[in-house]
Length: 63
Image (cartoon, rainbow, N blue to C red; front, side, top):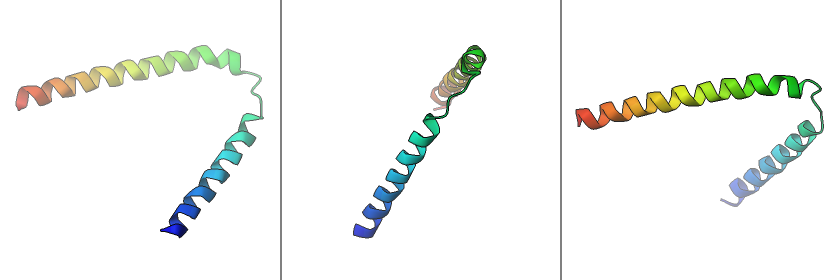
């Protein structure tokens, strides 16, 4: 059990360092792509919510 905890902590530290290294790089075109990304994410959320509500309704109706 001790080895597993140490392994998880090592992976956590490596992931944290990697994330911090990636965030230091700036993206010059970030402001240009933000609107498109927001639109795409909103569309994905709407579709997923609608499908989830349909699935929930079918589940309730069939049980």
